[in-house]
Image (cartoon, rainbow, N blue to C red; front, side, top):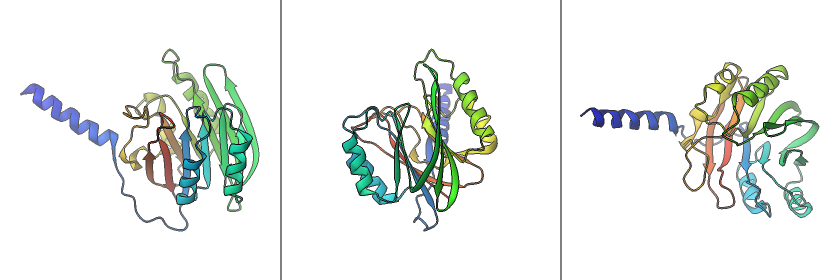
Length: 237
């Protein structure tokens, strides 16, 4: 009987913490969207999938991680498909696109610890501050080190949007301080919150955080054979 109650309790905990109950409602015209996908060094870049989701959601921000050796042809296809966006290949094997203009990019990194791009952009005639990160995946790395560095950075620069592959599960205590001034999309996930690895995701390492000036609405996740990470579509006000 004790084992049965333990299993029931574990099942309740699992569904409450790892299965989002947010409902996908009809998008309002003034809602904003973010597309994030760790493409896992997929070559060639799966531009057809990216184009499909940009057409479907018109995200103001498109961010790719592990975008290894994006070719001129890949970039030309994306630019031709979306002339209203500015695309930029970033250091640290990342790519950013905004529906507007990119004003400035600052890159910071520490070998085998983390990579960070700080992007200031103009979207809908307003300046927005974006940080795109990738934390080193080694289990030997104490994730408290890069997560504290990133937290201090986003607080100091009053960042609006934090996106990345943190290689750290959302449940980690190292995210506790993030929750003071930022909202995670974790509670707004539609369905299973896990993002990696495909085809059987076990942990939520790909995450999007917003300054509390914004209100998360929903987070959808899509699986493709091109990457072992899920593609994320976040909607917010």
